[in-house]
Image 1 (tube, rainbow, N blue to C red):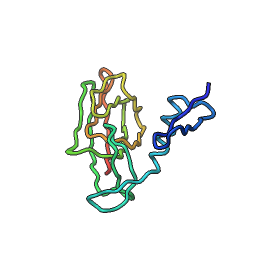
Image 2: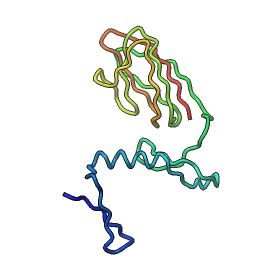
Image 3: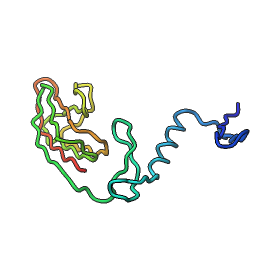
Image 4: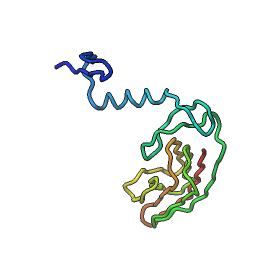
Length: 150
């Protein structure tokens, strides 16, 4: 079976895709392509790299070093808690100083089925979120450091 994409700008022009590209492959190709696109930032009147925020909106990102940061020291326990910043940040370093594992979620409620960050481990991610949710297993606690950059 040959898969074809018809170009809407030219009548009867078809592009054959060989080998056949499935949905997952197209998604990966789209992500890689978007990672190298630039867009016009009206407020700065400059071309900036395009990125996608956590809600799926396309936006231009500011290149270079972070211009804002926020550091939070969090005491996690077996009761779900959250720390919410005044605005969303795009890069994060989360360190579990222990003595137990902590379970994390971003902008949603954490449970012991959430992402597990073992004691003494760090997590670095580029994801736009505003609220870090955390919980430890029953009877356990942990100290978590959260560095948010923008």
